[in-house]
Image (tube, rainbow, N blue to C red; front, top):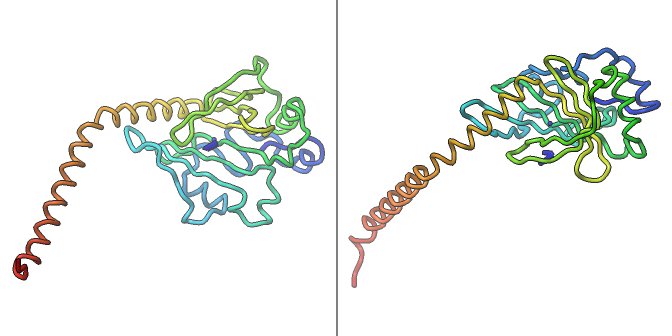
Length: 229
């Protein structure tokens, strides 16, 4: 992720978080799909100045908030097994969370270990869950992620993925309905941008010419009275 979208770790880390057992598939720790951007930032203890990336303003508003652990207070950072969470919003509503796990805390763990750890929180993986690939779109670009296993119901889906660099693991928690709507809106936004690009270029040139003429006229007003050849 320029990935830019918590799993319990096998052994002691998983056991220490037993209080998270039984979470529904729309929830990740204290975050849940449908939260507002403001509520997510508050829950993550992010400063008001945290950058929010606007991916599309039409036909729907799509935004991303990237939370890195080094933004959080030290105590908070040490209590989390992840290094980054990318939150995505559809018209102000959280529809996807992409979690990148800390490399040191997952070092040596196998894919089977990760599936077992996540299953202690969300239950068994889907019976038809098989390895595959998915294109994860973030920041206007797509990345191919290896999907190891999935947990799903009618409204939400969790995918355990291996990131395209090193040995990092991650999970992507998404609203099935809003994810589809958001991706459709992003495609439509790009189409509209391309369609209107020639007109925007003409408008830009017209503004530049008008600004140049205004600057020349201002200079003429100042220079003409005092110019002596």
